[in-house]
Image (cartoon, rainbow, N blue to C red; front, top):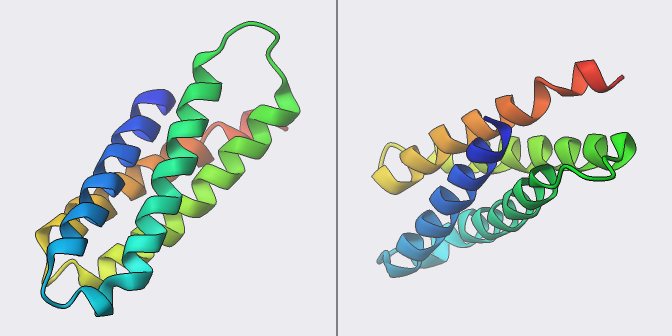
Length: 111
């Protein structure tokens, strides 16, 4: 579930950034676009790392989950500010919340 949530979030963020670039008010969406792209990159990387099952490293897993949870929260917060006007931001914010939860929940068990 973690990997799927990360990759789903990455896809939603990439799509949101792309659609934001086509909006008439693109200048007002600069922070949203940048946050979308950062989140997409980190979610993709996290999904890739979590997909590897050999030579598991608890410290690395904890670090990428923390980073992913943090960027998902930031992106979700930013997209929520535009969700009332832009459906793509609402969809992205929802995907970011799922990604945030998926990354934060296992952190307690990693110690």
